[in-house]
View 1 (cartoon, rainbow, N blue to C red):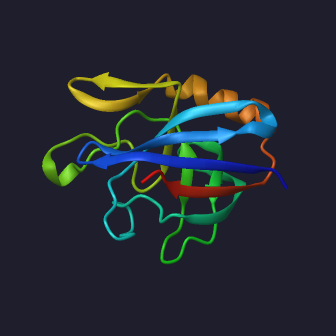
View 2 (cartoon, one colour; view 1 turned 90 degrees about the vertical axis):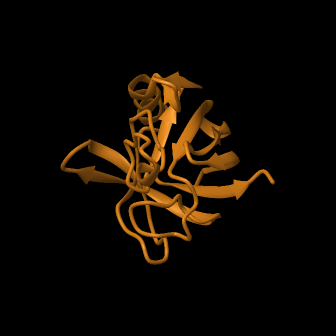
View 3 (cartoon, rainbow, N blue to C red; view 1 turned 30 degrees about the vertical axis):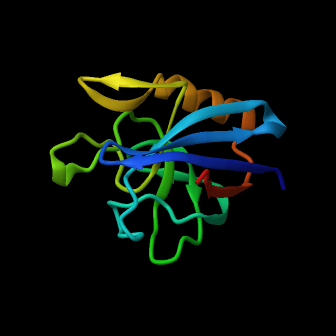
Length: 141
């Protein structure tokens, strides 16, 4: 089974941002998740650790990757979207605890975001052929 790593580089009100590296398939992206909120369902990023990621059908997104066996959580997906801000502070979010992928980091409407997300997700699906993989999530600091 191939391995990918998500290295988180920063976390704040605008979200948790990092780099997703999947060397075996030649894929790299930037990621956005909600801020860390003690693994609370739908509002927190995923705890650091090792997980199995498998294909799953989502009613909203179609065929997506699903992070399995996250304690106390379910339906953590890798999908397209730009924002991962803290909605309790009036920021936009396209994720309810999921991992968003983008080609680069930037700002949209004054809020930090991942950009070119749909293209980036399509690239991941094409290069990976939707095969199951191991994901290691680590904080840089």
